[in-house]
Image 1 (cartoon, rainbow, N blue to C red):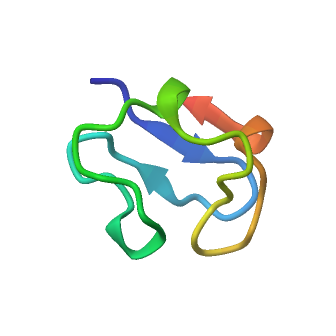
Image 2: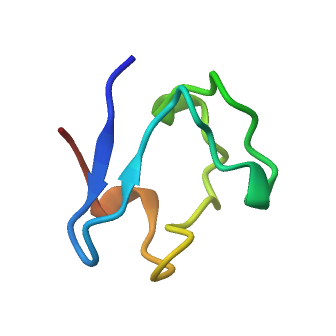
Length: 52
């Protein structure tokens, strides 16, 4: 599973952990996140993330 880093604030999306506070279950790959998902720290869009 590839991790993705927010270019704006440095938050790392780890698919193994998901984003349970925002309804994303552990094991959810970045490409499978909803289109309207945003960085839980700064609100940046998926387009602002790069593969780590």
